[in-house]
Length: 328
Length: 82
Image (tube, rainbow over all chains, first blue to last red; front, side, top):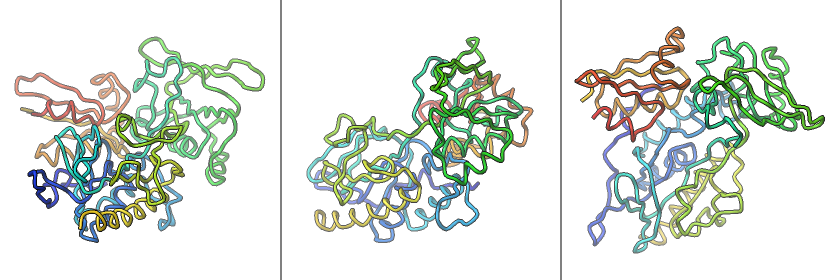
């Protein structure tokens, strides 16, 4: 784990507009794999690039215990280390990472205006690469025991469950991967899967070999119950028999899929698909001129780190073309 | 002004890295309690924050009052150390 000293860098070299405002060539919203990959490409083309991040550099990938399917790492790599490598590579070519939150995006005089927690920023082009976050179950008790027994980040909170019992909810790659990670701490894990396991064969094979995890297929997760302070059990239903099942546990980790991080864009002119992902054209440009979207947040995304990085590179090339056509 | 800053972390917590990164970039020094290296202190973090989560940042001010911030939350962290 490496420490950075460059996260609060001075803004990149900028150009004054006639109105006196500063203009950056490209601002990415987010500093996950998509934005970092894009920045590696744009900065190598002398396109000044600022990555604006409100959360974790590396995004959701940085909170992932282990990444085994990212090409180029034959033995796998931790999500945190992969994120650090991407950050260092982008910063090596001049990308600047700034910490703050974008509140709104509009067009103004052929530029993109970002309203942020640090004031207004202007860019020739913007790349939305805000990625995704884990979905919630939306069941009774989930909010009540949030961070007091209900968790969405195993690498953050797993250490509090040494020699404890856990429930993990979900049947995809994330759920199985994180359940396997949590066996470092927990003495037993009940994995509740609504239908069938959808994880890769490699992960399922690891799951079968792990005697700390009991898989419950066809079990919905209905309610989380505690004594008001401490979580005590999870109530589920066997979807075949209709029978209620109780799982006594000290904590619940939820990995039931991803939702795009787009809430801050809902009052903008950007269009979304029916499930909330950003619509783009073939060149990854959104319905707002000069604003591009790539990675997990884009309609059609495959929610893979490798895809996100590829889309970041594609977006960078399209953004270069856009800047050449509209700002040179 | 902060007199002392202590952060409870784990090895794998990306949000812990961000808190340390932000404090370092702002020129603050801090003490770190790594719960992977000192698991016996997890209960201490829980008692302080009331939550089973890291990072937990404890900011002790000049008047010895304390502010506790759970997670990577700049909206709370920045004024706490100011």
